Image (cartoon, rainbow, N blue to C red; front, side, top):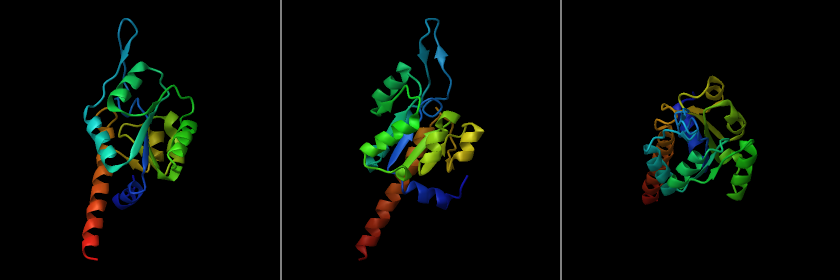
Length: 178
């Protein structure tokens, strides 16, 4: 993991976040009923983190290889744009950020597994959850303290939120002395 100053510098450039779903919003496990229906566990605290991103104007989306309706249902409840059933997350990410007028250097990607590596290697600020696979953690510029499904999304959102709030406060203090 990089030093805190390097992380803060990288965070300050983030204008868009793409999240993987399974293993980031969830603990990467699935509950399968006898009828074949799948359920996952998510942290409710992640919703507050996403609200904080909205407050500071950082946009975000979920990119998932899964086609499971549970991904779409959770994203819909949280108001998160969701692109699912993706065989190539990076191609989708490039299209999405182009629509927002952004460059990959202004994007953070939060992932946990090897199918996230193309995005992690392409964005300006690659992030891994604490329990990500070794190959993913080694590619990350920042490794979160929390595991997927246990508030990792909230942790990252809060880091951006408080960094942006501090920057706003500093701008106002400096402006008052001019």
